[in-house]
Length: 305
Image (cartoon, rainbow, N blue to C red; front, side, top):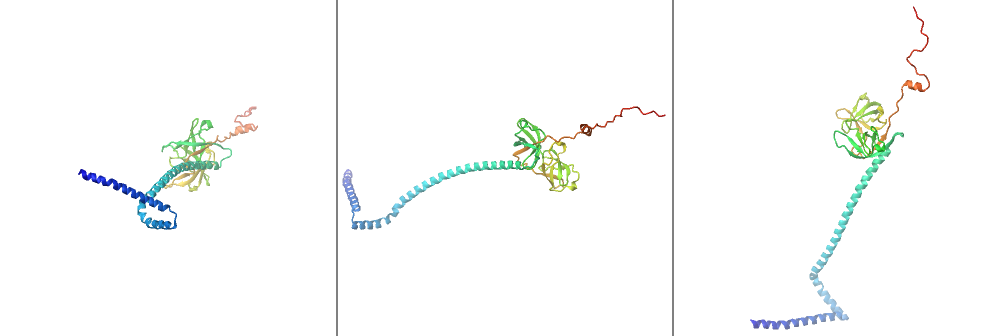
């Protein structure tokens, strides 16, 4: 057994060297053949290329597939990075879009406030709604203006369209507004064109009812409701809403103000109306002596029998 192993080792070494030499000779011949610049050799090379290269497509397929796979992977990485950048940019754009929409809505509210036609003698303070009461039994909001801005309880507040409520409670920097829908709200009103006077009484609903109406037969749905100014609390002519009838036939007011989106409110400075003095004071002020109930001085009338 040891002899057989030695004999196989004796044959393997020379055979390996022979194969190496033959391979080197073949490679050298191919190199020399490929370097010879001759028309015949060029034609021979072309024939060899035409015969061998098409038949080697199957051998090059794995290499070509690996190269294409590497290129596709690189392209996928680039697309994935671009997609992440686009998603990040889209989020930033959505944030800017929300901010732009909020600014547009605020701008629309302020434009609505500026479009309200008021008595030139009335001045106003514009405030931002901070919060609402959130109670079904109390309808009110909080403004960011107060006593430092000269606010007084009872002043009327409006949004861009109509009357919203009145100031009820003033702090140094804030003020509370009782809305028309609150159960404690009572607003003297005039219904146009009939001229009927009534009271808009809040009942914690979106459409407060009409109370103390003189002649309901003269009032129709769609009639305009404005403040009458009775009592000297609210200025006259402020739009409240329109008449509407509920399913029970009771007359209510469809309010003009948008109570679902109260963001800015205008507080009207109204110091009441001047009261007319009584007639004796007017006469005394004009220089004419006022009549008195006292008897004129003079001699007593003669006595009669």
